[in-house]
Image 1 (tube, rainbow, N blue to C red):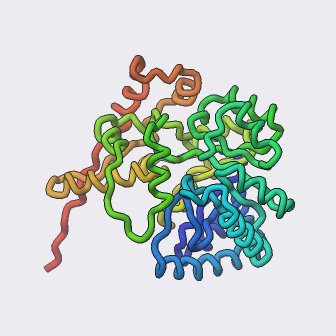
Image 2: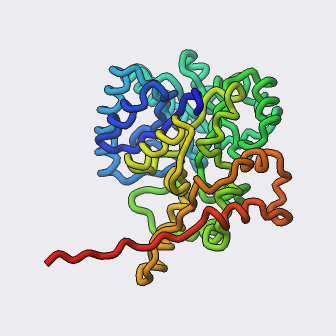
Length: 348
């Protein structure tokens, strides 16, 4: 079990405050994107954005009443020709002013140093968080944002390098946060292109090809190789980082509840696929169901209770040359299975 507080994403569901109220004492902040603003998750379209805005309004009022801190995201990895422009800067400043004055939003996550500089200059009381998608993974990069960032969310690929995390924290003197459950494949070579695309995504997007989906089909161990931190292992980061973050903006309320229960108790005996999130994993599961809809099989199941006790020690001290090592593959042989479909019942 860990005492580290947890940052969670707002998913726009009406009953979202009920889940947050349940875990309020363990919530570091709730991160959200403003309606109609460019985002690292795109936008659901005009009509849906209006509904989202109304629900967000109700949630932010709830957060103020309950003392839940909130964080506004400016994390679109691509703004096209607008990057660095005065028009984008003015829009950002107006948005920060509105949400801090109206809803007491305390912090902002930025993927651009330009945005961080603007916020620090215009809104010195707002804490600036350097986004995980700044890909900060060494002390030099951390020092590059030291003057504008209060919190650094490190590149997820350093999650299992504890000495490096400690060095970055000591040299920068900043709060450090880790994204613990994003299920993107390790060292993804398509990540920037993928995130650029979804920055421009609006409405119901047309299906598009993700190379990482094939990794999931071919390699049952890919999630173990990914730099996720399981609930059982978060306690190793006590005193090393200041908080953790859950990828959760696309999760249902049931999934979010399951994630929060797992990461606040430090234990999870279920399917690891149920407490992690990524576009690639969602696409893999959707494709799996389509491929096997005529078969008598259910979803893939990665049994967290079958992970051996030495897992954390092994994956935090290995050289990450997966092509020379089959440790994660051997773990997957024990933990991975395919569920059977529930038998149909007919009532006459």
